[in-house]
Length: 173
Image (tube, rainbow, N blue to C red; front, side, top):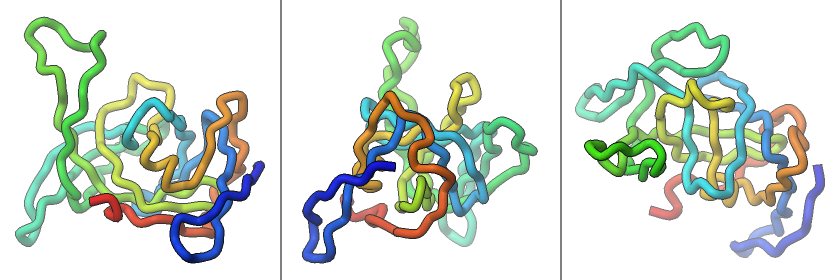
């Protein structure tokens, strides 16, 4: 893994940018899940493969219940607090004459670890079972990880070790 020095945004110690590959191993604490993630600078947000998604209320708060759409998952139902819902523009190729040009997706907050860095991330839930990677991390998450993407590399960060926590999901509210 290559690390490049940059000056810190805050008045704390400098945090160096790390070069990550197009595909990296990512660990999600709340789900005890490690998957290959596609790092996509063309996407804005992060998406995790989920299906049978249902929003419900628990003690006056909104929660979301779902099954992970990951290879080898036992299809156990998972439940997490709902952060909010987001409107995502659909790809032109996915839109027919009758369809809406956007979808609404539930968003949860997850601690995502790549290499030695972990960040709280807002992640939308959508069925990605027809895609090669269950987790896609877009520009917001990549910025929080303080990373630069080299698409010629894969798994340059190694196995997730979650040593340094960066950023706060919610700083940009």
